[in-house]
Image (cartoon, rainbow, N blue to C red; front, top):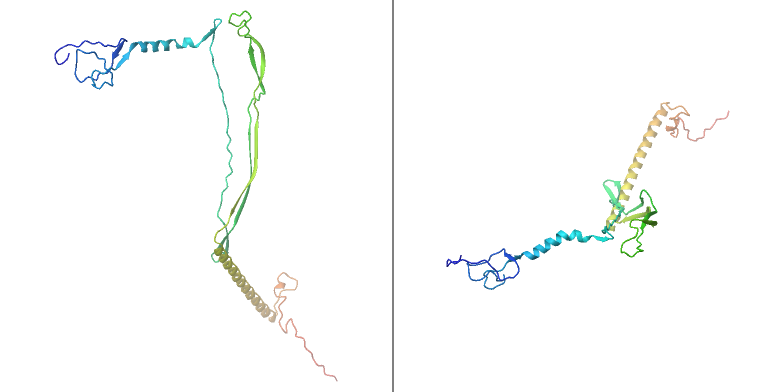
Length: 267
């Protein structure tokens, strides 16, 4: 019913069976059918219809589709059933080279010099893969598809004429890799490296002189102590373990005589 209290009859000008599912009407109207397109500039009674006939046909096709997929040959259903199999394996092998710090030489006195570093790393890797059980061939049945009476159906469906050997291509895989990796690290500042080497040489000379001084102090102390003992008439027994400590020490008038000449008076 519109604003003038008149009833609107529900109908459409479309000859196909349809039902309106959307309404985009600014105000009710009883005289004209609900049959304008959605793109109509007046934006009144736009047509949004769903048709029964296409929907029914789609449902019918879906219901009968499985029956049409199978083909019959001589009363025997033959349905294609393809099968696809794939397999594979991937083996990743990597060699890791770890670069350490430069070789550092320490000479004492806080002097540390770094030099060139060369690293050689040999390696060997291997892998093996095998399939069990191992089969070179498998038998494929060859069916009797002969139609001698030309009736469109095999004369002996399901009968196997013979078995055809088929190569599997199966094989074992073995891999071995041998190699060597090398790294060479070189300090870039050669001037500082030269100064460090000079400081190391000076420090080495200083340590050698300190060692020589201590050796001299030891020898002087040994000479003094052995001489005093010899003057006192004390010494190690000849041929014993510690007799060598003072065997090269000479005390004048005790174990050492200065060459001299005495005159012997004649009667």
